[in-house]
Structures are given as structure tokens and as C-alpha cells.
Image 1 (cartoon, rainbow, N blue to C red):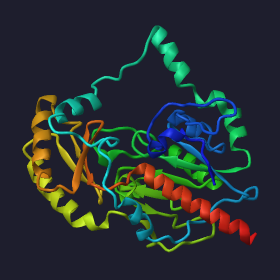
Image 2: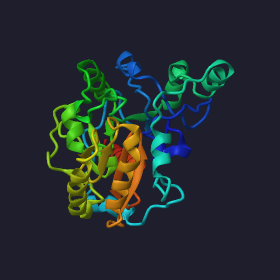
Image 3: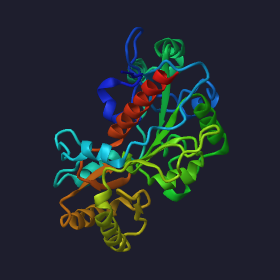
Length: 336
């Protein structure tokens, strides 16, 4: 029932920054346009380095969603019961942590040059150049916007608590949400992302998709403020808090290290840590997790992530939202 403009083979990573792969007549496209493009294309509603997904819909012109149906947390918890597949996940294996930290955290971005640059451009075309094609592909479908937060709506900064979005960007996102259902899917705590964005008409999926909530305000409609759509890792809250307290104490001996509590997962930031201390930091984190076999360790750009060992991530959250939106559209169309 869904028609996606996202790169279908990367459905589970559709919110991640990736390259465009589109050809006329194709059923999918991934749109990595710049952050500035979101501001420039406010009312056209195509976003920065993120996915634009279309859901088949008989929606009337100017009509958009009000809120998701009240699906309960147990609906998504069932999908997360199986353990993660180590062969396809980003779980770090023993002995590879320091190398992985260095590989995922280059000190300088590598820019292609010469023939390599031309080849890169060919493989990563600007979505703006395919704008008419994108509009044609979306004809007759309801567009849904999915955005990351850090590095997309806000700059990457040394202190994660200072990753503030500009008013210009907030106005752009607000304008997009007036036309299309818009969701922010982040590794951050959902409440923290909401406090940064401050737009009640959006869908928020925090903790790498493990904490999903629909809008509390859309047009004149007011949903229940405490309506939580999906929390598949609730049982892990006590152990996450316990590990947070332990890691916070351990990281005090490493200058610049910071542990961020994202409710259903933890982030150990080492952006401000001297590279000579990365090995010690990694060993401390692994030592703590040895006592918690139900938690796994993954890596990001100058950050280590501790998450519940369940089959759930941003991609699962996105698919959950699409399924909910599709069902809502189907039920709504039957009432029209």
C-alpha cells in the first residue's frame, strides 16, 4: 500500500544521510539535498539530506493528517522481540572498538577531486536537478517528510546540549508540516528533541526510534498530550539508568568525555576527548557493558551508543509510522 520515494534497499536506514539513486520511471528516490534547501523550498516541502516518502492516498487537495490512530506500545513491542542480527547490525565486535572509533570519526572530511569528484557527482546527483521528476513520482500520493535532527536541522557542535536550531529553520519545518505530515527521527531523547524544535504539530521518534509520539497539536485538533504510540524497550529503562550512573562516574577520569541519557539508550560523546584517550574510553565502556549482556554497543561520529539488544531502530520506527499513517488514510478515505 505504500509508494516510497526513499531508496528501498535502505528502508531501515532511510533517515540516515545517504546518496540519491533515482531514474525516470523508478519507484523510489532518496533525496540528499542540503540543509539550506529546506529553507529555500519551504512550501515545496523537500528536506535536507533526508528521506521524502510518499504514501498512496486519496487525500483531498489541501488536506493533511491530524494525528495517528491510538496504537499502543504493545503493537510495536511485538516486532522488537527477536534479537538483532549481528551480521547486519552495527554492533561492535571484540577487539575492533578503537579502530572503529577512528574510522567513524575522521578528523577531516575527505572531499573527492578531479575524476573522482565527477564520478561522485554522477552517483550523488542533486535532488534539485530532479525536482520535476520527483513531483511526477509523487503525483497522486501523500508525501510524508522524515527528518533527522543533529546535523540536519541543527549544526554538529561540541556540546550536544547546544545543538540549537535557528528560527529560520524552525519556520521552514513549520511550513513543511502545514502541507505534509512531518516526523523527526533521532537518536536523542524524544523530549530533548521536542524542546529544541518546539513544534507540537510534528511526529517525534526519539531514542533511535524506540520512543514514538504523534502530534499534540495539528490545526484545530488537539490530541491527548500523554498519548504514546510506541515504546518497545520500556523494560530496559531501569538497566539503562543504572548503566548511565556507572558510566558517568567512570567518564569523570577522562577529560572531555560526556555521557548523555537518551532515555532508552545512552550516548558516550568523545568529540572533546584527546585522541590519545580514545582507547582508554573505549575500554572503560566495554568493561561496564560486560555485566549487561542485554545491551549492545554501536558507534557513530565521535560517539558510542549503548542500546537495548532488540530488533528495533530508526528504520523500524519509520516503517511503524508509515504503516500507521497508511491505515489511517485507508480508514479516513472510507469515511469520506
